[in-house]
Image 1 (tube, helix red, strand yellow):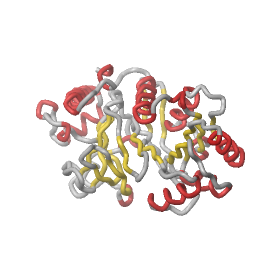
Image 2 (cartoon, rainbow, N blue to C red):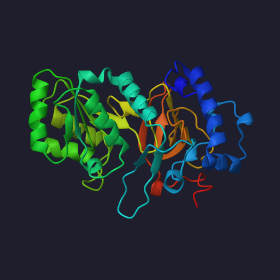
Image 3 (cartoon, rainbow, N blue to C red):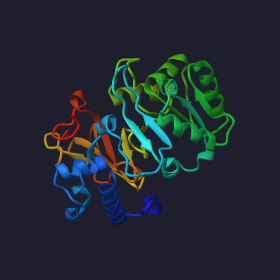
Image 4 (spheres, helix red, strand yellow):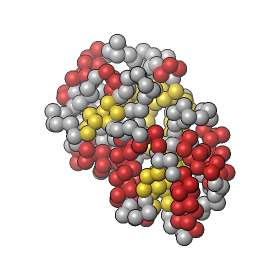
Length: 324
């Protein structure tokens, strides 16, 4: 079954694999099975992807979400304020994660060996268990370029390196959290021609929150680029969506975004309406592939999507049947 996930070519194949993954997780994931039972949902009555129940993402904070009896190889944890409960994603097959992000990167950006990867992820590097750091560290290794690397607080060195590489015509991927990228362009101004700037979101209390359009305009001016790329990922997922500008994200073939009604969490909305983002990530084969997130967004007809904001108080109404 796992072998088919990354071979999906069209929507019909996606549907068949998703329905099979649902049956597998219904049978093998105790928490997800309990959730489905509370909704009186059984695989025998499910014929469409939209009918599959989406597990509220808060369960990753309170329960062990597993569809496998294999030993846990990695535990990824979310960042959180001091004293808050963090999400835990127990990964029994880390190779599934590696295959997912490598194939996903290749799908959107081509061969990783064409890039120097520079990572400006200070708040992620300062804690253990970050799935983002795991991925970026591996991308740095897979780039096979001695210039690739992490930067924590040595922003002056990074500014110099970025300018030198870009002038040489080297393709560069600079991936960083929003506040650190803003710190960088306050240190130096750039006119980059061969560099992709990719923000992973997050001010983490370091700066005033900005709406995406404002943030991207500031970064575009500071780096001298026409577009700011973005990555849409989270601790609870093993796949990522990417945006090459304007905040419009696309997903790899084994990942799909739907939106749910904000007042009725069990109702999937029509294309184009703003609602809660539900993610299908088939790479999450050994945990849960059907997750109701705390993000608000809308999906376009071609399957791309936008993230508009978050639920108030990060609360998913009507979907917390078991959280308490």
